[in-house]
Length: 146
Image 1 (cartoon, one colour):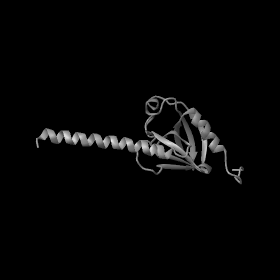
Image 2 (cartoon, rainbow, N blue to C red):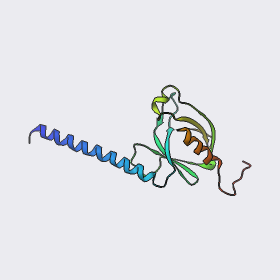
Image 3 (tube, one colour):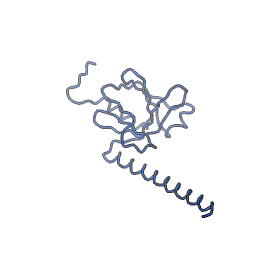
Image 4 (spheres, rainbow, N blue to C red):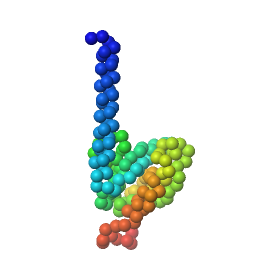
């Protein structure tokens, strides 16, 4: 078999793998959103350089936790989890500089405290309203004196 046929076969296999990957991403996204409560949520994993360190993701409320899944991962498990009782809302702001290119359009950046450390999330304004309501609500028997 000539070399060019091997190249064509290799390119064909590569295209099939890429299509399968994107189909798997779509199936995963549908499975995550099956029970509702999912929204576009970006998370800043590194804050060493201004405007950098953002990863696109999907947020999902699961009882007392907010789960964050990376967009381009095939893992069915969340990459990060934040418990409602340990998370506190600090402030929100618009994206600045390079952040506007790294995030979804029209998202706002939310600064929260989780166990004493700063957590930066980016979400749509409508999702921010739901996030604040989720943080303020709590199950019966919660100690409001904290």
